[in-house]
Length: 302
Image (tube, rainbow, N blue to C red; front, top):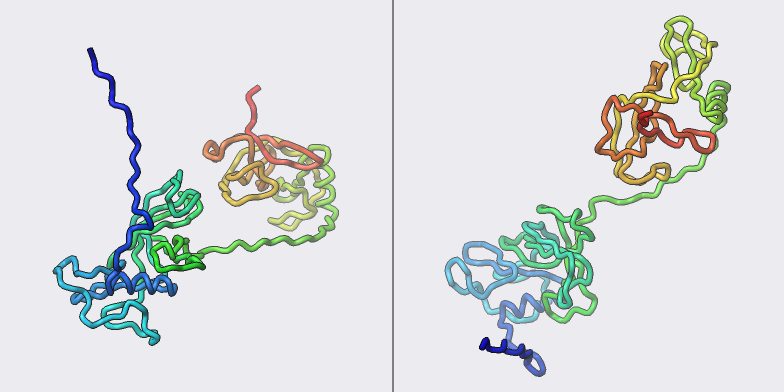
């Protein structure tokens, strides 16, 4: 007969009161400096700065300290020859994204584990980077430490690293009133009737929209009015990734559209089509709402 599977047995390994070890002069100095809000490395005989500091040079096995050191930082802000203050900023050399943090992770939201080369150091430090989103992470990005207020002398005194500030958002809003002239007033009035009003130059025969009273090419007075559109052709376009209150979503497309019967294009929003499917030459038609053009959308086959 097949034997019954062995039952699972849960075990717990614990050191009551915590596992205590002495730090020594190198790690002790590193942790004490962290408590003071500074990061230090140790300089090897070859001039390399190791961060975190090591008691022995990994290349030669020789001790890294050449002078007696206290575990507490000196009152003199100048460090010894062996210890070197680094950072606090650094550069991300490699990284991996943690989309679902676990209980013992340093942050309760998605973050990156990263190898960070602090300024003046020759080795990299592993720490968390709070970038907000995976799209914000990249190799080569500059980061700065975010310190805890209740520092105790631990690597976790650096709560995490955060990206260097490279952009700012300035809210811009200006209110103004436009009084349309005779030509623009006629054009806007026609839009309330879902009509694009244009003018034809009697000299060069150019058809201009919006309607205007004089030809921009030859200066002749325009008196002839005619309707153009409401369909047209996309001549060029741009995909925008910044929010716009008029746009249906982000990203959205703004396009120059040459209305049927016109010689000059107008600029307008383009919607009801994925941005990646917009092409030059796309046929579109105006969508009116509230007495004006809401946007243009691809023409539907009859």
